[in-house]
Image (cartoon, rainbow, N blue to C red; front, side, top):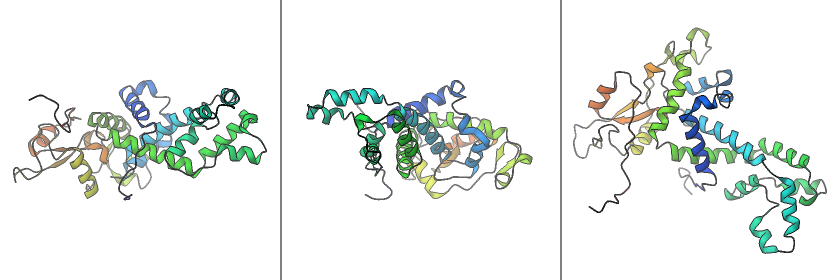
Length: 293
């Protein structure tokens, strides 16, 4: 497979996407859960302009890891052992239920990620799944969180969620508005390098050149049209059409130089929006029409 293609399996992608959406729509209800994302001014890492692993990637990764660790740890080992015993003489049922396969192992398998199986750890301790203890399970999971397989799985989950949510500009506005709260409260005199040099003044980042890969990503996501008035900016219908890559949350309001904070506008709409509003559109061009017309 080409290196620039994502082989998406969508194992739990939609549930994680929904979680990210819910948090951004009601983030004050999740303030305690988000403390780890903001701790020690970690958000300052995302003031570096136009990182390929964007600020939105970082937020998705934080949410996904928090939820995934909880979900994969929620194993009723005793019930799994009872199911294994109950269906010991029904191979078809065991093949279907797989009571001795942990959900984290299933995720690794779905994504073709090599990992250290729970049964191997048990074998080294001269145990079987039927005789495994909660301590065995807890130790296995703790080792898993520190392993390369877990890092690869998180990267896959994050990439798939980003693939879905990057298309949702209204959600990107909410995310960048959340991040702008922290940027606006930043005092340059309290920063060390390299963070200090990224700011124009207190609470405002310097404008950074937009790399070609960012322009292409935003242009194709927005289908070569102004997201506010839908004017064609391809240059095919009119040579006077000029695309503008606009910060959804303006830099003057604490916006980031991040691929998730850009949208495509025409000259006219870009001039109107310079009043400093954080604005985007919830209108999207469908892939095809289902009308009878």
